[in-house]
Image (cartoon, rainbow, N blue to C red; front, side, top):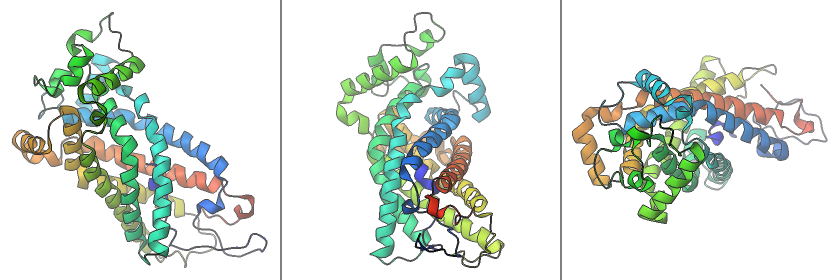
Length: 359
């Protein structure tokens, strides 16, 4: 998420009057320090670029988690090569455009996250940046799911439309959406009569979901999404600040950066590395919840039935199924999100703060 890169405002605040020169440097770039008209377009561009780069990993992860045991792919490399060879490069981006509204959800997340963090610190008197950010991230995640859930459901059905039987089985209930599309995945591959271009397929999936389940169909598994993303966000922020604190101690810098020298220039690097490790840690801790979420949303089964099937079919593999691409995706994406977001914040500071920022 775009907001996943914001630094702790409690490390050190540099309060300054623009009319008076100060020797203190601005280690933390807050929203009031930035030109938001310049910030939002750049943030949107950065988020779109990062999402486009890592979408194929998300598609492979989803397919690995939806398959029963290893009946389709034996692993991440096999999945990548099979999709590319059998379906073409464009298949790696199937469903991408339908997830673009999630960029807007990231802005909502960012706004709520910043506001919640301020309230928790100033009104609830919570001093720990780790705890404040974890709670604020959890609160912000709830609001973002109203956009993430329906777009995820549509894109996930688009991801598997070429070979639905291998991911859904023969169950009429599981395949209800695919049946309404009126396609047979095996027959449409390479067919000259395949009318399902990326955009048209997305619209037809939306129509099929609405016909099968109504509006509620777009929020199937909403609770499972909360069950995943709320702890994922809290886990990320906890891990992020733990790693950041570790690196600061290793470099002889206290937790509030008050001992940092005036020419300190490695703060962005510490934030980026901590973000990557935080994303990897969160992926490792919540992988089984991700598996539960995607099975409920695509297989269209209830919570108890899904849990029972996962236990009987996958056993202990529920903790590792699709884990490799998910850890790589979360780790690298968190690294680039934090690097991009913090860089953009520094580039968008108001003129009176330009000489005070710290890289």
